[in-house]
Amino acid sequence: MKYWQISKENIIENEVPTPERQEGEIKVRIARAVMSSSDLNLYKNSHSTTIPCRVGIGYAGEADEMSGIEIGTKVLLAPYQYSKDDKILINGVDCDGYLRDFAVINLDSVYTLPKEIKEEDLYFIEYVALAINVINQINIDTGHYITLVGINRLSLLIAQLASYYQAIPILVDNSQEKINLAKDMGLDYTICPTTEDAVAHINSLTGGNMSDFVVYSGSREVTADDMLSYAHDGSVIVLATNSPMISSSISLDVLKLLEKNLKVITVTEAHKDIPAAINALATGTVDTSHFDILEIKWEDFPHYLKNYDSYKMKKLVVNCDM
Image: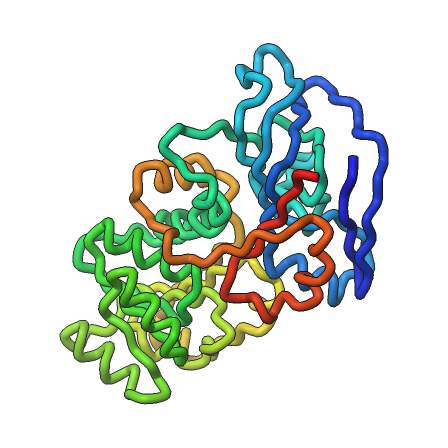
């Protein structure tokens, strides 16, 4: 088994015998491993050594007969798994990820795929699952206004799901490039706070009621500071992110939270929503076709990790076929 390991300012390629499969596990030949900002965070800050990449796409090998998974079946390797004491672990963060040519993993982390789904959609599966979790947490309904602070993959997917439920998404970001992307995806209500009064604009769009829900999904171009002003009294604030780099920079005015009687919800993982995310992609409920993908060679991984910020508008995917 070949694999990359990363720790603080260190990237190493190793090779060891592939572990023996145990009962309840499956051997998978990994074809693609999906990079994330967590990999960069580990490279810059972590003193532990980890195999990176939270999500993988592969082909099933040996498995228990009762699994029902035939050899050669394309499978999704989910970003989460359970520890022996049933704690949720994030691959590539709390335990080894998928940047390797083979893996022996628990069957609970492996999902077979419907024929309708495209492989490139699966690169965004964690964002789709997180978006579904956000929507489920807030019980959004027809006519609700939901303001999304910061335009990124997660907020765009939340906006699509909100529209599906006939709510009205409003996207706020300082980047005109990202605002244009939202409009290209059919999301027309966008605000750039550097060129207009965001509070006044939201007040106008909502008929003076302001937003029922305000979601901060960790954009680096927009801070969480002003988002409480976008909400009406008694509404819900959602902090949604899967990145420790972003979540560590969030701060909220507690006094304003109390004055406006705001409820705060956090969403940082979505292990129960992976099947629903697969279904949403297969049925076209959400669309990831506007998200840029850059596939890189196995041997080029160190270069792209070190220069990750230069490619942050693209989803980096490592080809593990060697």
